Image 1 (spheres, rainbow, N blue to C red):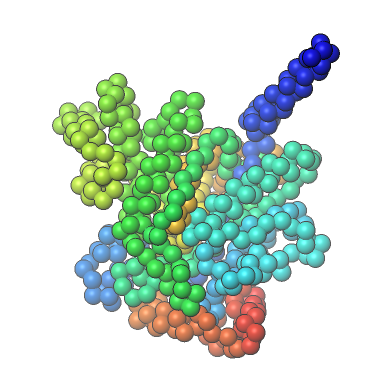
Image 2: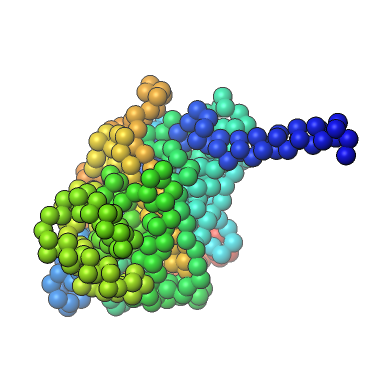
Length: 497
């Protein structure tokens, strides 16, 4: 090979290496645009049932739902008036109105759900009614995989924002992610773990809730039949509850072990400021946080230096407790402890105060609404912002997403004060927009007997068509969307109150 060719080849290789290096690091090395959530709102049905009253109606022991599941109330949905489309329409419409966003600035719209009302037509296509004809080039579509769909939609929107930013840095484009679901179960032990709600998030740059470091994410996927919906004509899912809990906790283990290594120095649970978990019911959230702390010690089981450092971080001084932790993590493997209630209870009790401070604020909405499937994790985030507001500035929020079947992810968000304060809502502004406590207190509580009647009616309505709804709309909020009719071709029509 001639010297000229060698020099030319060398130059090409160097250019390729620079290009590869630039591609892999550009998200962190360039001026950070701080993509993330610049605004969010929540919509939930205006009727609910009290879990304490439901315990009495169902004839179960006192505390089975309120302590055993750690739930307070549950959203009630009449499918003849409200479905995932009406919930999503209301959530997106209010997001645009409350944050004064020109719909033309929204260039991508993603929906995460597992409660689609059509096997072909997307919820996103219904939402296009909220946008002018000139917005018809809007990208994005529905993502479906149990409770994980909204997280995939969230990452799709973030990746798209970064791509658009690299192409045209001057435009201030937005993406919207809608997490929406209705969770309802047949009579039995799973019924009190139902719920409903929608979370609409406006994504853009210079966000007060930012995904600042693209390295800080971890995923775990596998094949499992823990929760699924194989029968198109059935209103209810098929669930293996005990196995689903194991799948959830195993995914948590894998994601946490991967994520902690992606920090410059491997972190421990106690190093993080706040936590949001996918919440089918809040007792599982308690177990999940305890599980993360258990993992801290289990991963350091044979390293005395690391164990002592953890004892110091968690302010554990009692020698008996230290010994019990060491004996536990050295005598068992993580794979054999998923259904070990003694270990779970020990770490729940050990971390009660930390849980109340760092996890408790994110459980506010999930305890009041119940399981919102794909919206659950983001209802937790809305709760955290609604409770803490600007106190989240410079705080790290650990997010764990899980969807049966299964798909899971753990990632970190950062609370921050935005650079362009006049053009961006701050954390305390979002807190005021959410106004969670006031809105929850204004709901209408229905008796368990009425709730039971509504659930029986929902089964009949599920595949019904060629009807004009006669259900009352007095409980539906002003400005909310509701189902008006379904024609003889199964086409659904909605009105705004």
